[in-house]
Image: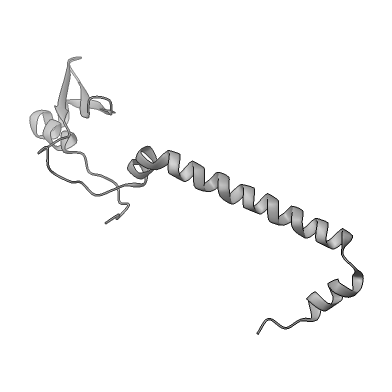
Length: 111
């Protein structure tokens, strides 16, 4: 189930519990799935974001886009191609069709 909420990182909590007010800044190292903190004495500490290997965290908008970008790009490309095709068909129909046929199409009720 996709909830698309902001994912709370376990590494932030771990680093806050270790160092408290001595953290100057934190950043997320997505390649290693860790949170890295710069401490006020100049040292660096890191903590993993993974609590348990089998734990399934809720989906976020970023995680969905990272995993499904190829599929979403293909869908957007197909939608754009269909829009261009339908627009072209409407233009061709409007310029080449018989005016009486166009009047009949516009006057026809759709119910």
